[in-house]
Image (cartoon, rainbow, N blue to C red; front, side):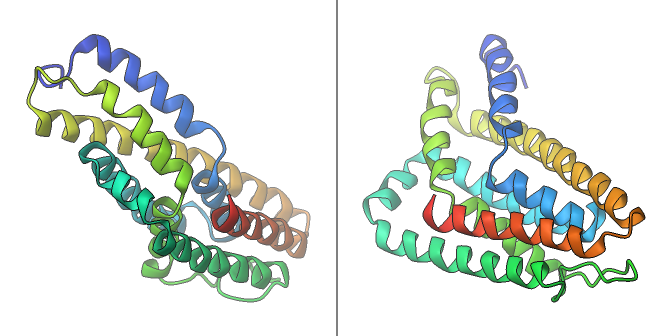
Length: 209
């Protein structure tokens, strides 16, 4: 990888992106919420959808397509509102201990489909304006004009996805730990309400953040 990127740049990029990625945000909150409600294994489906979205945002930010999207915000905002409304609806369902995301009173899960979970992750990543702004401002300084562009993009996006995935697993595992604690205490309804409130928060954040 050092053949494609200056090692000094690489040494700066990895801790910088890790710090930004591990900071609580929409995607990390969603991972924690799903880890709490359906477990880490099922949350992996959301993660691969989110990673596709992050990778797409990263590549488009480097090639400049993001700037065009930001000049035509109407469709982008509509996409945000629809995605936010969907997550808000899921949160309400979870808060009421209903729906496929809620944990049953006997501790059994009713998880959503893999594509549904992946879609949630993808929409959350794509419709996050702060993610676009961050990628637009972060990635270009790490691209060297003296080296081939494509290998640099592949290497940086690869690192981004590895770091992002690690942080998603970390947050989902934290949600799983809380899930086990509440389930053992018999507070399944409370766990659903906490997870539902977090999901509603992500939906509002996505739509109006």
